[in-house]
Every structure is written in structure tokens, then in C-alpha cells.
Length: 214
Image (cartoon, rainbow, N blue to C red; front, side, top):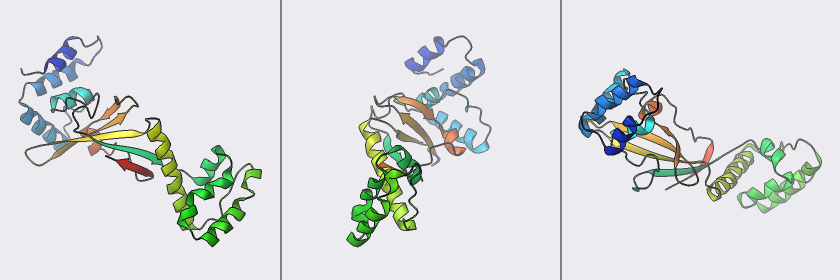
């Protein structure tokens, strides 16, 4: 059986209560050369037999040659994305005073005449409990939601929040096995999603987010 020293150590020191069946499956996978392990997981995914699905995510990554999944980027092989969620304007205004100043986020996106009108239309929002931006056109609402998302993105980046990383293992057959990691402010992975999660649509959906990738 061919195992990495790190994985062998973890298996030997696994706490009581670990699923012995999953450890046996991991050991069976590790007994193969890396290329065969990758193809075995590809087959497992495609056929939905899911024999290796419950192997601990980092152990599965190690077995497939992704040695830095606990701290992605240490080998500069991951693609990172920071994101800010585009939230409902009224909900955002409830938490950010003064609400009237939110229109300034799109000052450079509208004409000078329209911006003056928006300032006048929003002037009373600070005196109400539930600010309502009904006066925005659909396009202006979209622009303001994107601007708010950008503000959130900037704040998240400053605080090391809302960052994910992706890494793909290429199989000789052409199939790609994708991992997705939630990254903490110190660069550590706090949650790792596996190719099985990708197949099942459990990776993060960033369609309603403003993102920055590198």
C-alpha cells in the first residue's frame, strides 16, 4: 500500500469513533498510483456509486495529489475569489444610516440632472423607519445593488472575509475533479467541498454577488 506520510499518520492517530468503513475505502484508494486514484474517483462520480464520497474531504484531496488543501495557495495552485453579496436595497438601508446617502453610490452612473433628482427624492428617507427606494428605475436599482455589493466586497477583503478558492485535478480521460475551499482570514481552509459536492450542485452560487478573482 502506497501512502503519504501525512495521511498514514492521520489514519494511525484517528480518534475512536471514526468511520472504519471510510478509512478502509481511503486505504484502498491510497493503494493505487495517483493517476489510478484520480480515474477511480472519476468513475465513482460518473456511475454515482459514490464509494469514496464519505472520505474526509482533505484526505480525499491529499489522495488525489492536492497536498495544500488545508492552506490553499501555499503552492500557488489555487484560484481565489472574494465576493460581496448584492443585497436588497431596503434591507441594506435598514442597517446603514443615513439611508439618503446611498444614492451617492451611483452618482457617476447617472446624469447630473438625474442625480440631483435622486438626492431630492431620497432626502426624506432618514426620517422614516422603513426606507423605500420606490423612486428608482429598474436599471438604477440594479446599479445601486451592484454598488452595494462592491462596498461589501471591499469591506470583506479588508477583513479577510467571504473568500473561496478553487482547484481542479485533471484526469487523463479529460474529466476535471473540482475542489472548493472556504478561506479564513489567516489563509486556512475552514470548509472544503469535493468533486462530489460539485456534481451535486453544492458549490457556492455567486450569481448574486460582486466578485474579484486572482
